[in-house]
Amino acid sequence: MQHYDTRLPELSRWRRMQIPVIAWAGYWLIRTLCPTLRIEALGQQHEGRVYASGRRVIFAFWHRGIIPILWWTRNRGIVVMNSTNFDGQWTRRVIERLGYGTAQGSSTRGGLRGLAVMAQRLEQGLDVAFTIDGPRGPRFVAKPGPAMLARRTGCPMIAFHVGMERAHTFENTWDMFQMPYPCSRAVIAFDAPIEVPADADRELRERKHAELQASLERARHLTESWYGLTEEERNRHRAQWNA
Image (cartoon, rainbow, N blue to C red; front, side, top):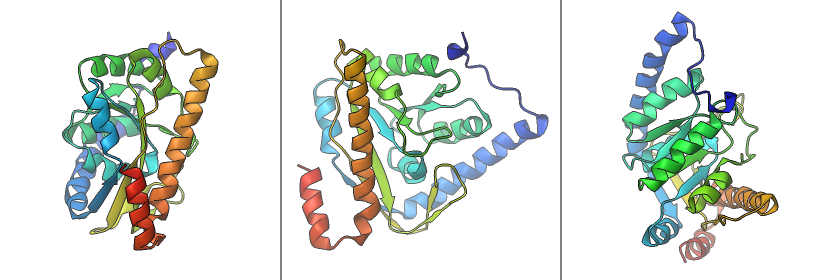
């Protein structure tokens, strides 16, 4: 069945030659740039409470902030849904070098097989993560994979987003991808866990999916406005998100 097709697409010889070169450049860009970032995290207590319950986390975040996120959560063995197209092939090499696992699939190719791999990794005690509007958008529209996986595994979803004080936005890309400038500050906000019962019917699954969309938007609104707030306003939000 096509939903389980995780074979790599046919690429030209030139494209195949580009994959290791781009992967090498991307990896060293992250290793050089990201240690200069000053990252503050809000809401990390949520994942700690999930771990205390004996479960793992299904993370979801928007694609545009992936660079500082890759650095912040490196070397934790988090399993990321990764597409099999050209971009996915070089990206896979980068993220695996940074200490992630990968599940091959996307919303358009091999998605159900990728979810099955993620379910296995959750059972093995690893977290999983989705760039939830990837691999090609539409931007800021969450796909249903996390809610499906949460229902299947009993593990909760946690949405988060990163906002950067200074970054270049690639306005011609589908995701408005952001590259932080060296020595920039960044803030990551983790929202409260969202549970999906094992007996959830279609209507309830859709409500939980809508909750995830709203959670992602709350985190994005806060973090992308963070550096325009006064310190008093930031302290108020810190108290709320870290409660």
